[in-house]
Length: 136
Image (cartoon, rainbow, N blue to C red; front, side):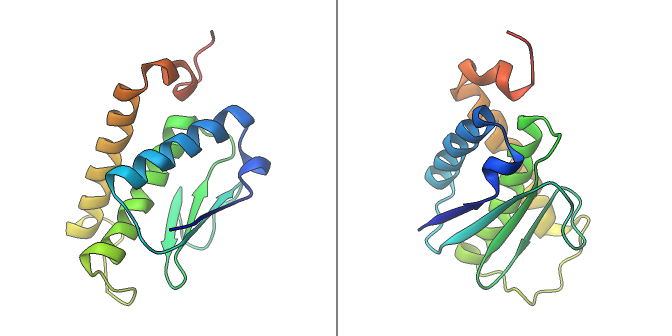
C-alpha cells in the first residue's frame, strides 16, 4: 500500500508533518489498508466536507488542516481512514446510501477515530504538547 500525501508541506508545519507521518504508520499498523490512498491536506473545504472527506476509486481522503490543532487533524484523518477501511476490508460500496450523520457507518468511523487518537497519544506521551499546541 502506498500513501500519497498531497500539499502536506503547504498546509502543515514541519513538526505537524512529522507527527502526521508517525500517526499514519500507526493507523496502517492498527487498521491496515492494502490499496493505495491519496491524502490531500487542504486549506479549504472540498465539496460538502466539514473537516474531512473520503471519496472512492481511486481512494482519496481530504483533510482540512490549515489553522487546526494537530490532534484535530489526526482525528479527522483517522475518521476518514476508518471509512477507507470500511470500503477496503468490510465491503462498503462507494454507491452505498449512507447518512452523513449517525447510523452504523458513521458511528463506526467516529468510534474508531476517537480510539486511534487517544491510543496514539497514550503510546506517545512525548508528543502531548505538540498535539495540543501547548508551549514548551
